[in-house]
Length: 391
Length: 195
Image (cartoon, rainbow over all chains, first blue to last red; front, side, top):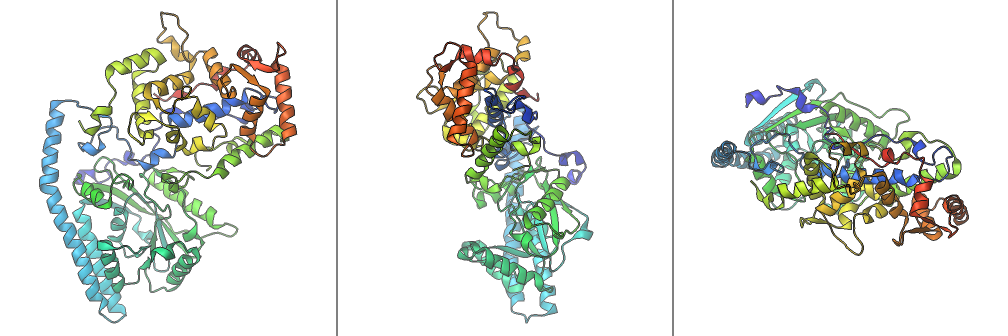
């Protein structure tokens, strides 16, 4: 797979695989010249509505990206029917290799990596706090994450390592899968943030926090935004503690776009280190569609793919500027990440994966139309309708 | 290959849809992909909820009326044929040059049929007339709470006055066509494919 390493930068071009041409309609399409209600005004809403039925910017972010040519994994086979006998044979051979050889090897490695992580962090946890403990903790974490990277056969290219996150800062990245954590943590040491789980996950979390301070929340504490903010700020003020790793989208997106960043991490007054992660979809579908597959199922699929090929860009650190509020800052960081990773920059909330869109957005549309009717002024195009990137 | 074999579109079906709607082979397969991705229940039909899950459509003030246009009277599910038949209204008219229908039946995307589609968005009770009350209701959907009843009423009155020719205080389809005769319906009610 050495040839896979970033040979072709075209993979990371902006994703623009829409099926219809969304021509901008000017506000002159409404009310014609008179800026009053015309019966033809309905065409405007009608066409925009049908356009969104044919192709919209949001729903496609929550399912795996369609490939242009088949990568011999049945799971990516949405539109490719039986093409030829030769391809079937190749696929069959692929299955043998992947499930018979690669998967068992990788699963063994994964168990080793996780097992070592739990055992060694617990041992390091017995040491008194100090330089030795931190040093050993770092080494242990890095080593175990690197074993896990091998377990996935992840071929990662890191760019601009001079911008790697430093203590007292917050690292933010776009979220595609739980594997994002392994990819970043095998190249640097971070304080993780998350909810305490039960089961194996909980065991791992409890062991890790013995060796160095991670930020785990009880389920009930997660809702309390002030508590969360306080713990995060306390952490970043202590310069001996590691940079915090956060995924502000709050949910996994399919790596073709970056969706709304929750402003919480951007309210804490510290340096933000943006990181862009882009997976090459030809080798594995890295996106975790949590409504379709559970975590274990997902990990097995990852470990039986060809490889996980991705690029990581460490972007220059950013700070909130004078007169910029948390939301604007969050959007600025998001735009930088989207630009670097060749991802579509959307303001839509990733939470729309599960929740309905709020009525306030429709009310905004109605308000804008009404303004035109009674105000009689031309509104600039960008403010009128939901354009990609406005909401 | 793969478990989706049962839901793949058969060639004969594609041909029939091609004849009926005028979409090309690749456009039909693209839209079939889209149809199946919207069909969360995976039962080969779409319900109103499936449409409402599209955020850009949910925030469209006339979203519910547009969704309604896909469902024949009294039905709650639309299959792929019905889906395509409705979408066919939005094909650009110039695309018709490629496959002229010899039997002479009017294509779904003719100017008249595009106008009929829009007319039906206004005509809530499907009685082929837009009454003052229906016009008011649709206007109310478009403006929300931002305009008073009186103002909206006078807008409706003015509109009907301008359009109504036979004095029945409502707008028939022919009167609708007349009002919009200068409007470039073809351009406003067409959606172009990238391929």
